[in-house]
Image (cartoon, rainbow, N blue to C red; front, side, top):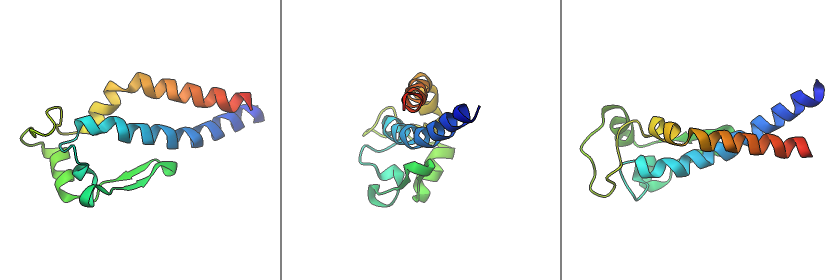
Length: 108
């Protein structure tokens, strides 16, 4: 059982970083701006993939996320609650990534 716990613990910590980075990339088509402005100050979000964090420092991003807004001509797929859309669209991809990471840890 200790081996199984180790695989799950290491796989989870490795998986958080990989899946968070993928979510960040996958979410871009659903945000309002192609330039990355949605994610913070001049397109420079605070990213901490290792701990599963993407911090959006822009008050405009918060408002657009929860209240929505006019669809932006720059990004026709952009809309409110883009994380939920991203997670729904890429749920299968996230599961595949998790399985891949657990299998890599098991093989070590």
